[in-house]
Image (tube, rainbow, N blue to C red; front, side, top):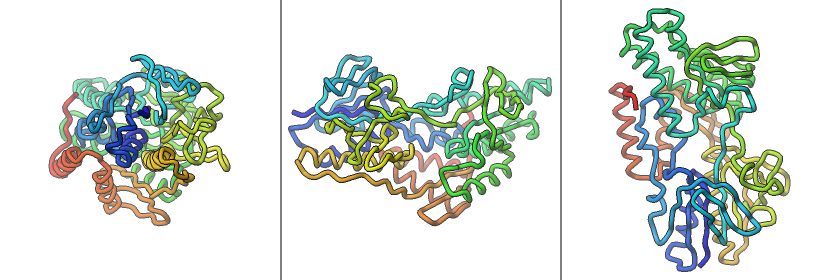
Length: 411
């Protein structure tokens, strides 16, 4: 029996399993094993809605044991400490695991760029725990500000900073503005709207720089209309418990700082450097196999295709899903002694919500904005949720949110 070990329970790992298992279902010759540090799959693109109370946290997660609940597959929750391609073994916090075929889909880690204090004093927006931390922080500081008589201290408590002008930062800023200037303002009449400050900081010259400039410009205008201050061409130089220091000399005094400014490789400490590119990603052939090790497939944020020319694939859920699907098909072809095909990533487009009832969208060469894009994004995300139960739960959450306040209870 061939042992296929999948590392990572995100979009790449779970999609590889679904496609490969569907093709090999019932085969007595293969055994899948999924290894992840978390025991759940997280639908990350909706994380900002958990942070602002639009969606319940359990509605965008699915236990990984449910995902692989078929045949004789197994799941192991563990931290991965080393991958040895030579001996075909993986060292984990729960012991060593051997494999015949390996899939590396471990995602990425926040990139703090070596800026002093950022790791210690910013919330890296990557997990359910991070979303809950943001939500609880907002509620606690509104409660404290409601009883604070010192004006300067009240403004500090009500100052919120987001670093990073990509989709995550823009989505969170828009949702946070809706929450603070609507629900929280109504629930805390002691607080004046002028005391609330939301600042979005980015080192680039425009928002959403991976998209067409028109999307970034429209998102900027929308955020400014929502009373979000946007600082472009501004680098963070340091962070302390109560202040974020910027390259232009400004010091943003506040209690909450969310870091959404980039990712870095999650592989540099667990894989020998000869298998990695300068960016710390696996040297991957266009068949999505590790160079020199055809038994290893790579998907998601862990790959850098080195042939015929070096090619980087965006670190997005959409790209991870597409790569995982292709890697799984090539893996099945390898087992069946069929020819493998090269991977070419063709983005389907992207939709970025900016608060309620507004989004910016780019579908191939078409760009459109407003409520239609926002509704399309919701329909798309409901379709992409893998669990039928989660689809129903999120649909109910959204339906209730159109007529009721967000949930502002502390978790």
